[in-house]
Amino acid sequence: MKSGFIAFALAAFALAAAVAAAPLAAQEHAAPTTTAPAADALDSALRLQEQKALQSGGAVVLQGEAEHKGAAAVDIITPHITDGKHLEVPSFDASHGFQRAVTLPSGWPSFEIPLPVIGPFLVDTSPTKLVVMLWIAAAIAIVLLVGAARSHTRRAAQGLPPKGLAGAIESMILYMRNEVILPNVGHHGEGFVPYLLTIFFFILIANLLGLVPYMGTATGNISVTATLAIMTFIVIEVAGMRALGKGYINTIIYWPTDMPLYMRVPLSVILSPVELMSKFTKPFALAVRLFANMTAGHIVVLALIGLIFTFQSYLVAPAPIAMAVAIMLLELMVAFLQAFIFTLLSSVFIGLVRESAH
Image 1 (cartoon, rainbow, N blue to C red):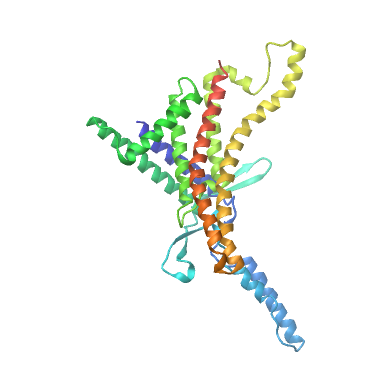
Image 2 (cartoon, helix red, strand yellow; image 1 turned 120 degrees about the horizontal axis):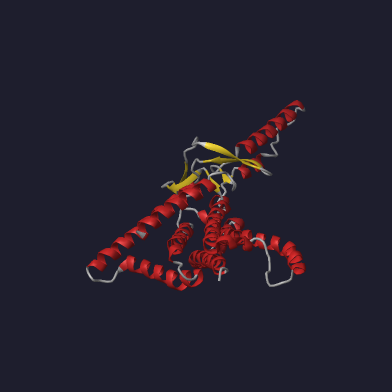
């Protein structure tokens, strides 16, 4: 039953995060050439310069040619940390870095969400690179978790303990459940275990995909991390409503009953906005922490590799490569650490709002 719930929750995560990531909230990178507006502007400037040179009878000197070539250079950094409509796949063509860009389908339904202050917000459901990464992460998590559950059931029926990958996954699940989730969520917190385990494995696999060649880090996009944080925020508040009942209003309006009335009113006026703001700082911290940590590591690695091309010498290559390998090993630890921290803080926040009833 729990494995089925986890599979359904993973699919829901991928769908919700895909809808959030589908709008071009992050910078979209095009194919590795000059963008159309920039190319048109450069071509117009070059044509104007050529006409002026011909009218004056002099030689045609294209001063903007170097800039035009520089603008058309391949960008090796931003595609790894931004979203886009192109997906890099392996290729045997060494002249293009053993990769080629595949354009993702477009023209899927889109709709606008009217916002009171910002204005209409366009949601395009066409897949982007990071949306594909979310689907892959959800598919891998479903296969691993459902497969581990079936293997455990089959081995338990034979009176044997789980082995191999299923045993490793079971040990991770038991540790997260018994040492992280239940102690922080509090009494009768079994109902929150499937959600928190799902979010842990989903974030972990999405983080690890960013370390695989030709893949991308979906959790390095603020739209994805914000969606995960909003879903956790809803779980936190619903848990508080169920545990506190009518007393849930006290988590918004500060009203100290052990003080005289002339003290309650000013304190309520001062501290009630603080209480309300604290509800939104929790998901904000979850979203920004995961986004910043996953993005920073990739920027450092790509910046170190970029030193080789900056100095244009193979003599400096060993030092940047060694440092990049060290950062990649650190990124492997960070992938596990950030999934753990997101789950731990989510458990703590749920436990805080539930335990305020006692």
